[in-house]
Image (cartoon, rainbow, N blue to C red):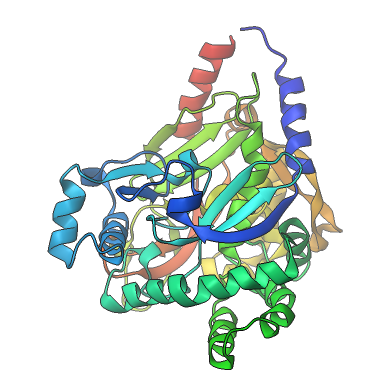
Length: 414
């Protein structure tokens, strides 16, 4: 097929740059997410069968089955998950994304984010906070209780808040957060604070009790990662409309399951390219070693496809205290990412680089030509189900997955 790759990429970049992700509502996954049903579990990363799932993913699946009332205990949940009665699909194939294990089931509340420029919608569950939580594979009774609180208490409050505030422009909040020291992947303190300020006056006008209002505010205040589950669908909504552009070599997803590291390319819609997931090099909590680490996991690298996360580490030099490395590394990573991207963001600017736009539009061809892979910062889950987070760090995407995609791209567009 004879195509103009440069023109195709320019078309994609215009779409990404023009994206206007806005938080419009809160819904229930089973009612809002396309294709969702009671026996479907969504997960992060490329497709994976139960028997090949990482420990955290299996743990989170078991937790979701108990949360839904489909299993009463760990043994029943494990048996049901392996029975073939439950379906598993990547979040990315249902217009959404999930952090770490990324597990979502039908009763879970979801954020609904609409790209007002293109009209498409993206989804994500709510962020649970840190510690022993479902997304890190934990499934103890207190994990399930917390998920029920989010469903029954937090979600209704957030829904009524949005009825008062109207749609919230997430792109503007992300832009402001970059100038407050975030990169909105592993550092969301500024973004969460901005969101907190945005919703608090409306929360006070809701009909909920003062105790309920206080509980919601205290939860958000204690959870610096609260905004991550908004930045992710915001980025998903911006890049998703580029899928299917003939000849486009821009990445539309970088996603990891803890088993495989996968990517998607705009000009190869519906196709996954995946290799074994690497282990993250990072800072571990006391008492843990590299042997305890689950390989790289999560859909949160959707932020990198929009020029955020590891691509904007220069905007958040303090991130190195969480993921390792040095301040110089943070600057150097961002500078290097300009070499494998097609443009600079018109909205996401990096103050420490004299307000230069973040590197945006990851180009498969440049990666393979230059031998430079995307830089990613991420959390680290324990390899066993039920344990939770044990650290955070940096990971380089494996070159093999891009070479695999390039071969297919050349086959289609030679």
